[in-house]
Length: 319
Image 1: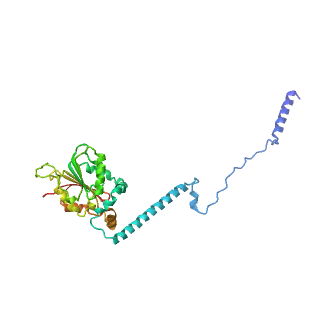
Image 2: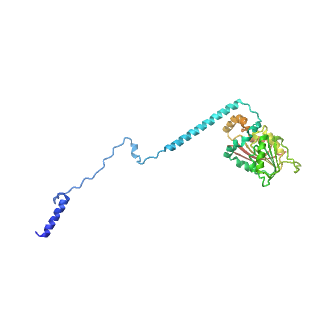
Image 3: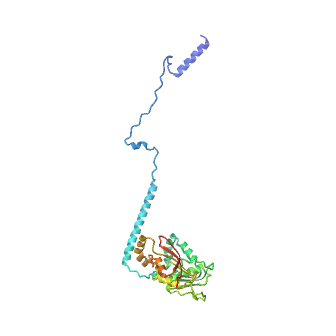
């Protein structure tokens, strides 16, 4: 045997020993390995569960559930408090006798009045409504039921739209507060007067101006949230019409009273005696009927807050 054949035989023997597998005969057929098949899933008892998604479903977090629970408890507690307060006020109203004239209540609430109404007026945006009304004042101005002077910020006194201003209220304590506020806001304005007086007794301005009718009148009269405390609101408006300039004079009203809705009027009626006794305000008066009874002519009329806030621009009616 030649050396080359000996090397080839050795190489084949080394490959056979490295694989460690017996060499199959030349004529033997090798069948392919059988394919693996997955076993069928067992049928579930509920057919609706077969189409469930394998993705995890989102759930409400414990923190969110706690917030919602606390909110619901707070709201229900507050509603219960309101209902209990309402029933208590109605019961109290049935036991007390309140006079028609409750204006004396303002003597004891004058110093705390602003703080008591500040939040509610902000929520109802009463400041804007006061400003839009009062900035129409011109010439010689009279403000009746001036209260603690919640309209003072809105007068155009520095623009010289008003020649003079007279403030009138039945409460001497409130008139004193108005005088203090006015001195701080308009220290240079001299033609101003403060009176403790009934609106039905206010005389015409005491100057020497003369009109075509040969009389003295106010050019503008302002009245905000005052008809609720007057014993004779229609009579007061009727008198104010007699001291307003007949042709171009205006009476500006911003009041609160009855609503458009019967259910709300029932609430106001039930709570009115207790509210009037405590705050000096009959909040269930029909402002529209009062204006009609006064005989004044309506130039403008607007209502807000379910109809409980009334705004009027009036002028003296025909003689």
